[in-house]
Length: 161
Length: 202
Image (cartoon, rainbow over all chains, first blue to last red; front, side, top):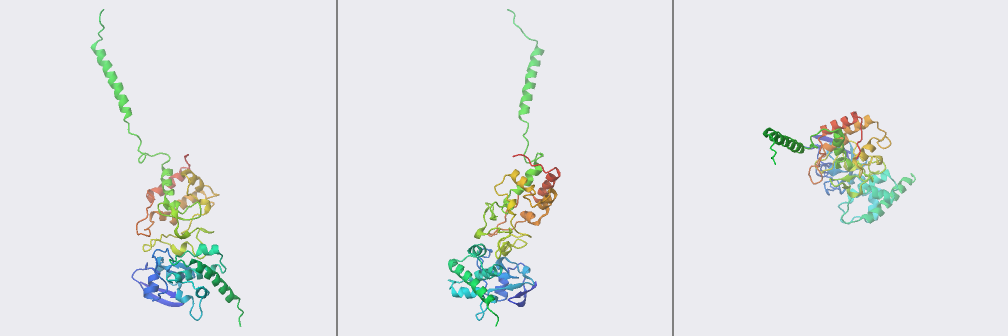
């Protein structure tokens, strides 16, 4: 079965034998974008979080057939070393990762949160960032989320020159 | 003194009478009791309907604390998930983050169209059968539904009927559907409404 989807702004067409193949495997194994991680395979840990039409989804539990013609954003498309996303910038500033495996999922979930709630409270973070980190970097992530919100606000307030 | 000897026919008649009376007594004792599974009663449609509506497939999404429940034991949804302001979770992490419009056989995540919690007014968790029925028929609590609309919701809404195709759980084991087959349930609900949706006492 052939399915077209836009991944990080680029139209991709993939052939999959099963339309229920998890989007995670399409992204990682067919498109070779290894930043999105496999954690539990049960939509529980959030390591596989990416965006479908701007919404955070657990890609291990998202059949690729539902991604047809949609905009997919992975951690590779969130920003770049030269122009990092506010979340990526904050993660660097706060030295969040420890082993790092779960961090792409957390960053994608946070990016989705900041689109909906530009200045999240601790309660907003508790409600929306429910991924799992075995290194327990939660405290640093909370600081980084608040910092990312500041960076995002600063960038939008920056006068156009 | 002359002994009294009753006529033989009288003795026979007396003996026969005792046998008859005794036989009647014995036979009435052994009349089979009504079989609750077979006997049709006025409350049968209500009973069948409530067997389903009190099943975990239904109650898990009609919580009394805004927190969806999971599994046969009705434990709180893992990872602190809650219904949030609109019964679909929160702004960036909501039901659709994990639940799609159909069950996922790979992850074991259940799914159906309009996957969401019932509104707070429709909380059933912890209520008795009659309390659930009373709540269900109260327009103040059932989303303003008329009896006919409630009947349609109970018998046609895809999210309700998902209970009979609940898929597998995270371990790959089939979830338990309600014990009453779907068609029997639908017939029972319609019968209960057509008979005046009378809620029996506890």
